Length: 121
Image 1: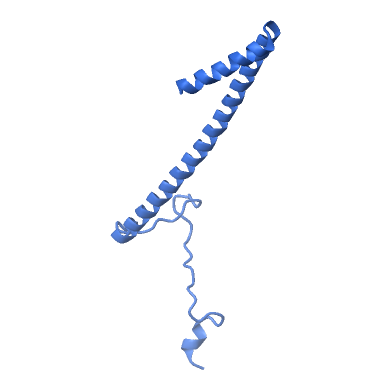
Image 2: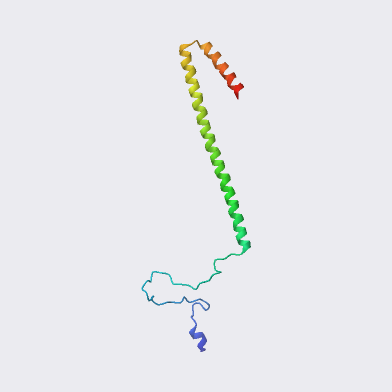
């Protein structure tokens, strides 16, 4: 029997065995162990950075479009509510006028106000 084969683990011939470290001298076992300082470890290539910036710009543009669309929808709903309220107030005003005046005269006033409103806009 060769000695080289006997010392290797049987289950995984190329498996990496994790290195076991002892207890820390200062007693802070909950801290992660220190690693060697690598100043270039966090750097990425220029092409990757440019691609990432382009992607982020595209995402930001899409977010802006979505926000603008949402705001337009909100403004449309607000305007619809305001229009409904104005129509309701006008209807109530004419109903009050009908109580005091003749119905035909109120209709004439309504048509006149409608014409004036069209001319003003």
